[in-house]
Length: 77
Image: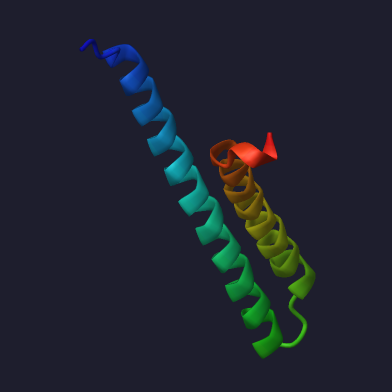
């Protein structure tokens, strides 16, 4: 049995990179929701920025998850 260690290392590196990126983007989405709540508590704040940030971040996370499911399920190809 022969293992292609280079390919295994590449898969590991890409998986780790994508995982860290998705976690950071999700955390930025939670930060956007916190900004939205902060703007609601203090009148005069801009809630649109926090809502937009949260929506874009969560949409990006959902797109990555949907792409992963697309890659795994063979009926989608």
